[in-house]
Length: 424
Length: 124
Image (cartoon, rainbow over all chains, first blue to last red; front, top):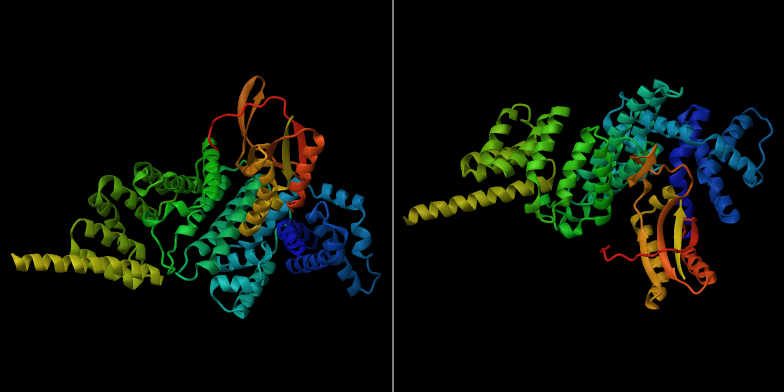
């Protein structure tokens, strides 16, 4: 690894911690960002010369804080602080600040930094964009690319979101236990959103959006290191790892989506699956189930099946029914119906999803599954109607292409039957 | 004498490597091991999953209690180990030096002579 790569790595690793602490000092997002930028510039100058500091985060906080104070003083035309060359070499000062900023403090700093990004006034996409910009330090250009919008549009979006955050006021007092767990839940939901934004992707867009999944995993790991005994955070991290492990098999050579059943499982990342499974096992020992753990347990059952036919659909059906109780939602029932179709057949599954028709009347997957079930039951005409509806609702070209395939099969089967009839 | 070379480094740093960076480091480390393996001196080698995936069993008042962790209170975590047959400490130090040269994590290698070694037949 080159020296520059090492430095940029150290900086991005230290970023959430440093930004969180600087935000606490300056109580202003822009001031904290400015101070952090300044500290990074100084790091790029200083680290190659003096070697990497023992604790990059403490160094950046120390230098960033001084440069922030310096900036305030300059504005009031006072004497500047000494150069960072002089201050940063003082091992004492560095270890002193490292100690003072230790442990629990850091934890609440990072949590606060993430928490202000998921302000309920902000729409989900803005929450994600702001978190990626502020916490992860991803450039506006990269974020814009991931969201498939222009750079200036994204810049505006982030600026607006930041202004809203500033207006809302940042909660600086140390959170109590209840508040901390509420913040953690909000932040976990945002990390999940970031992942989904990267995961639900159109053909051809996967390479641009995959970094969102990786960033979400990085943030989940960060949360897990801060809250090592939270089974839901274990579940979240496991869920993301198990889903992302399939990434290399999710698209074919022409960029079309490959369904779970048809994926080449040898392409799945063994390393991510192992870590995900270890985390699921660990979480379940706590016997404090939650939605992320249940979803991770479902993903784990898929990951554990060497072949699609080895999948434990009975257990998946049970887990989905548990998830239904925790978070009643027609989409979860729809997912459960897939498992039910495998265990009890298409008729039972169809009976399960029929009542959802009204609430899911604009949902592609509802009609896709309905069509599929009807097709299995040999009700071709009705299947065709459902598939036509699905195509009209498809979000991506790949989804539409997939349904098209089913329709083609129906037409072919229909033609074959007609031919057979005529022959008779 | 068989030596264990225990790797300690900051998990935060190592986990932040991109897939490409990680693969590059692993390839370089494998390169270092290669000549020792060829000479038949390299024993089992292991890289561990992050401490967040770890569980600890501890005896509390005579009772075995399973808890999460170990908690990363320290800056560096135990991330993996090598075992190597060495004539003397110098050889073990030399091996660790070679590893550290291609390892950008800036951690440390603890060199410990092995007292009891029981190679199992379990596949990795």
